[in-house]
Image 1 (cartoon, rainbow, N blue to C red):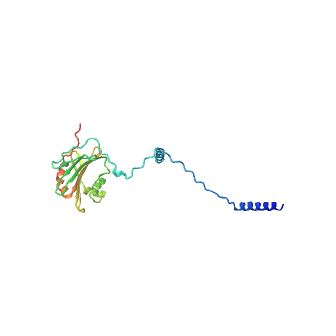
Image 2 (cartoon, rainbow, N blue to C red; image 1 turned 90 degrees about the horizontal axis):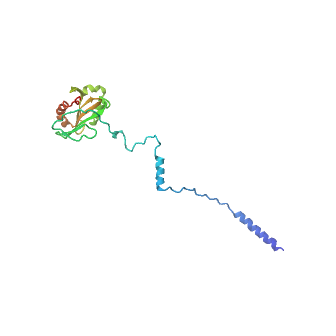
Image 3 (tube, one colour; image 1 turned 30 degrees about the vertical axis):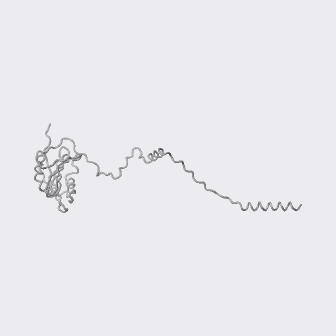
Length: 217
């Protein structure tokens, strides 16, 4: 009769020891990630997210700026002229009304004829653009009188200039004229090595005498 209580006591001790050794273990379940979209849908979703909202202007293309924007040339009746025999005509391109190579003793010069709507910023701004092309400092407004010569011929009012840059390794020169015609401004510019432009200046002035407005219908 004494064996039964001893067995019960041993079982109780074993169960109590097992309970004390039990520990609670926690686990962190990984977050569920959605299955990847098919390639076609993924591209469409990306494009939709990056597309601008309706009415929002598209951003400019990288590297684009106003410097690369073409300026419209003047429209309507063109001036007419007679080029000297020694000038070699060349393709004018989109921005020119006329274009010639002028041969000379120390390299060719370039004769360009262009026309733009309006006054293109006015006389001072236009002349300073030319000066900048041969690395000359801009003129002040008070310098216009001494820097320009005004000429009336064939019913047209020309503004003549002669700019030379002697500081460069190869001195450069611009002899040019601008004339307003029917709401546009026309530019006649001879630019190149100083010796070539200097030698061609008398011919250029004679050439300007041939420039005339179109005959009235």
